[in-house]
Figure 1 (cartoon, rainbow, N blue to C red):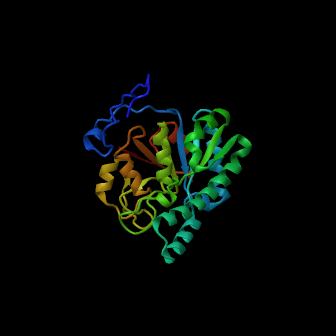
Figure 2 (figure 1 turned 120 degrees about the vertical axis):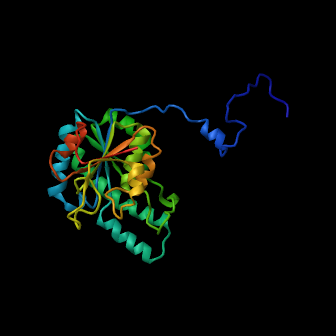
Figure 3 (figure 1 turned 90 degrees about the vertical axis):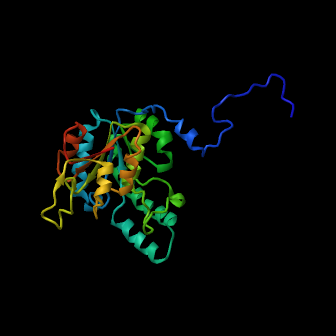
Length: 271
């Protein structure tokens, strides 16, 4: 085909290469720019915090507000017991993982909307999951803060897990990925436990507290239960910007403030 007069070639090292080529993929490694390096992503657990109602949620929101001027926060919210009920029904009906992920996200969205309503008078806005990447920087410039549904919007495209059918990417993963995309200063997961233990402290009094640990080491321990989604550990091993997450007991007043200040509270899991 004859070229149009004056046409120019757009040079690119990718133009004639397969994007599946391993050497090409390795060659794309480069520095990654942090978009919002002063941002802190704080996730409120659904089952551990939200389901406890006013006595657990309101003091935590007051602490978030008290820190917002000094430490800019965006709030992810997880699903609670309602999601477990709907997952149980969906599993009984034989629904695939993608359909289960779509259903589970509804409970998380409801919790996030409730939190945004409680913070609305203080200048916080609610962002639907698909729009958080496009709108979050603009919203943080115009509003005091933002609240989002912690479950990532994979929906029907959720990755099938290695075992069972429960969607592997929950609100822990979604909150971490938001932090990783924006290059956040920190990702803090608020739970109802003091951090990570060598066993479940609720059933084993000899459980050893772990203040800090590497993600790969934690994976190798193969603990039967964890207060964090296992997929987050896998993501940490491939981190580019956010190379740690901190698990903090959000039911204890002052813990979030200490975590935002960089103090050694809870458990730090690093890459």
